[in-house]
Image (cartoon, one colour):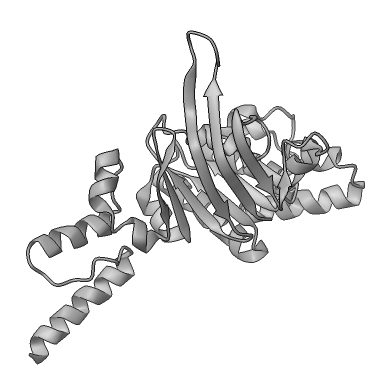
Length: 287
């Protein structure tokens, strides 16, 4: 499913002393199957923006189209849109409420009117996609699990709805490095296996750099930059001015170039930087 946002404006508490413009003239498009990173400092408008993508918030002005359907059109049923656009909020484990993991993950599919066999198949597939064994986990209470495992259960509950667009708001917040890597690797596998559209909201430039094909950078309710990672990370000064850190490899490349080492400025993964340095060493030996 494609997403088109046109001239989106959102004002909280309009016409009151507490009026605040959270989004200002936001326009972008996301093609079906893209993996997009949405980054920006706290208060930049990221969470407000993603809540417009499945109709949780209504624009003050502007349009949001999902598969060329204006989701604010009075003839559009938002429940149908929300079945296709899955949104995982930050710290989703705090929203768990069922007594067993099976019931928790099955809650969404049950509301779709599926048969018991279809629901069980979806629960099993969703749990396995987030790295949890169905037979071992299904009858356990989600409240017996670690924070990272509870988060996987919450994500599995959204995946079991089989959304065509998956939006994750800081899915690794508060997790240890191992838990963070496991969650991100599972999101990457989900995208690769099902080719669904994924929007990942994150503060981590390292995570964004190694996962996504397009980055949207937000600053004070506006889009500051948009494009492929290679283009975005070349805008080091602008990113730093906004208050965003650069990926470690981008910072390393910047330092090397400042010292006169002729390394390309559009490499940002460990493997790419390693290959560039090895190439420079070989060229120097052969000179």
